[in-house]
Length: 197
Image 1 (cartoon, one colour):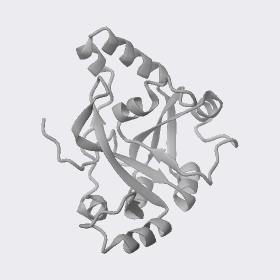
Image 2 (cartoon, one colour):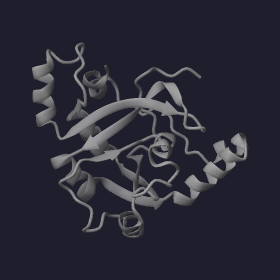
Image 3 (cartoon, one colour):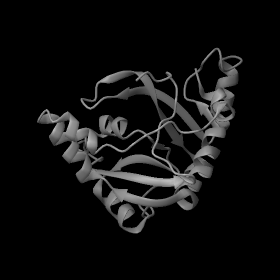
Image 4 (cartoon, rainbow, N blue to C red):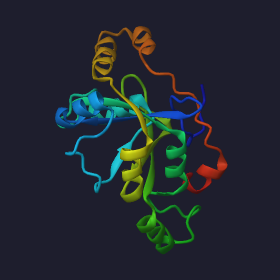
């Protein structure tokens, strides 16, 4: 199936969208248990959320990389996600989107969110031709994410490990049954025009 190069695909409902993050157990486990980040989670740092399960698996090595052993699925409000997109800036200068490099730097400095489009991944974590959204949250966006947008948190570490085991065993069809369904997210041009290279 062909995908447009820059398109958000995510598990979502009428009111929520699911994103993924991976943390060390001392952050991830209490977050999953309590449905909110613990005091050790630093709001002043940029935090990156990823709507693609397989891109998260690529990033955290199926939950095996140091400091990323606990994989979380965070259901957040679509209102918050859309706010972040509307207030985001591309993480790199793009001539067709920005007036000039100075304009991009100005936008980047002011924006509470930034967007990167990285190659989507297949079950073997190889890059695909189309892109996956990574959304970085800082300042106001990071605070809103932690304090207002989170609806639920699920620890999906065991699911990640099971998918990895099935892939390693060559049982790709069985592995696919454990993947979340990630249809096109209805962001619309109004939210994405300034974020498409």
